[in-house]
Amino acid sequence: MKKIFWLFLLSFFSYHTLPAQTEWTPAKNNRLLNDYVGVLSTTQRNELEHRLRAFNDSTSTQIAVVIVDNLQGDDIMNMAQRIGNTWGVGQEDFSNGMVLLIKARSEFENFGEVAIATGYGLEAAFPDVFCSRIIQDYMVGYLHDGDFYRAISSALDIIEPVASGEYSYAQFKKSERREIILGVGGFLILIIVLVIWGIRYSKNHPGSFGGGSGHSTSGP
Figure 1 (cartoon, rainbow, N blue to C red):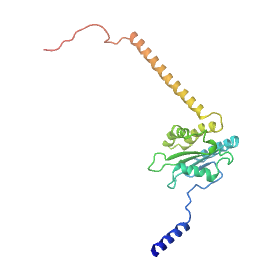
Figure 2 (cartoon, helix red, strand yellow; figure 1 turned 180 degrees about the horizontal axis):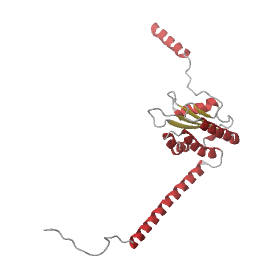
Figure 3 (spheres, one colour; figure 1 turned 90 degrees about the vertical axis):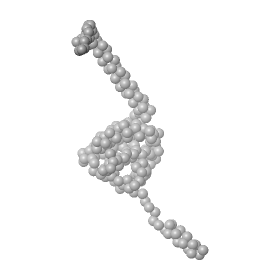
Figure 4 (cartoon, rainbow, N blue to C red; figure 1 turned 60 degrees about the vertical axis):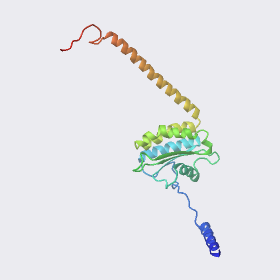
């Protein structure tokens, strides 16, 4: 019994004296565009940095774009949120920061992973379903092609107006539905025009075997 007691005591102190494991986070720098993989050219990095800085200065909403090649076994959303908290993205009083995290592809992946994490102040403007739509509809196609610059630019084209209050997610959905309706309507009109044209053409240009009478015979 005494031996069991000492084993328990030893394991207890050993557990509580082990150094706490810290979760990995990319090193912070003074840039808003952080390409730790080198998938962007110098010109592209500078253009995106200028764009993010200008948006931050004009709206006070801060967007950090981070590209890594390893998540250290962590979930990408957890890491995106941790970057936002550790780096202090956005204004602390308003929690109006956003982290767009891209995990570059490896030899086993098509394009890697993407996550959009927002501060509490932006959660209403960017619900999860909206962030998912931005990734799927405006980024994945470019990332499959290895075009990180266009993927990021395309996402910012949607994110910036909503974050600055120019229009809301509801308005975005409404305009998207309008575009779909107009697209479908235009397609139907084109089909109707082609059908009418086909009918008129067939009437004015009868085929070589259209009409007449005849008979067929077969050999003995």
